[in-house]
Image 1: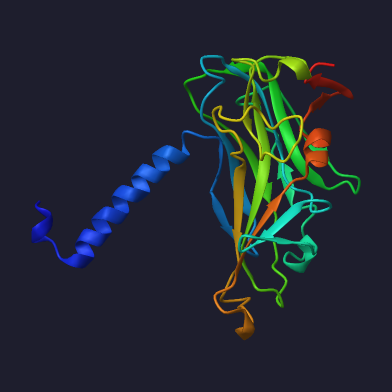
Image 2: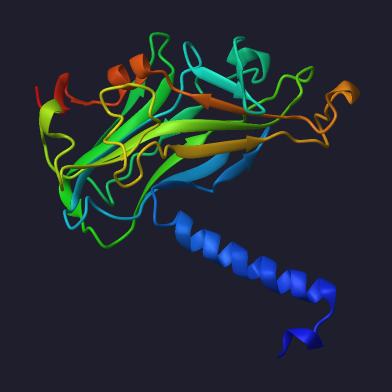
Length: 252
C-alpha cells in the first residue's frame, strides 16, 4: 500500500508501529527487565532478561543490585535532588524477591541491606547460558506506593547488573570475554571501561503512578520524572557474588 493512499492518522499509526518494533529490537540487544514498566499499587511478575554473553563467551552467572535509597543519587526532571527517596516512594524496601528457579543456573540467592531488605540477587553455577541465546531470571516486586503529596509521576530505578563469563579477580574483570557490565558510571570498581559496549548503561526498572487512584496534586502540573541511581559504595558492597559466605566473584 502506498503511503499517499493512507490518511494522516493511519500514517502515524504505521510509523509508530515501525518505531516500536525497532526500539524493541534495540532494547533486546541489552540486558533488560521485563516488563519494562509497572503500575503503582500492583504486584508484578518480572524477569531479568540476559540477551547475550561476553562477546563469544558463555555466561556462568549474573548479579543485579537495585538502589537501596540510603545514599542513592536522586535526579528530578534532570536536576539533582538532595532530599530522600521517601519524599516520592512511601514503601521502598522489602519490595523485591527472587523466585527459586534453576532453569538457567543451579544456584541463586538474594542480597540484603543492613535492615534485611532485599536489594538485589544473583544466579550462577551449573549449566552455562550460551552466548547467542536469551535467558530469564524471574523475580517479583510487591506493590510500590507513591507519596500522595509528591509530584512524582514516574520513578526510574537504575539498577547495576553484570553478566559473569569468567571467574576473574578484580584486576581481570575488564578483560575481553570476562564480564558484561550494565552498570551506572558512578565511580565504583565496576564502572567498566569508557567507550566499551554498554558503558554507563544501567538496567532500568520503571514505576508509573496510578493517576486514577492517586492523582497528582493540582500544583504539580504534568508531574515529575524521578531517577534513582545506586551509589558507588553500594555497588562496591552489593554487586559481588557471595556463595555460602565466600566471595566467588570477583575472585579474592
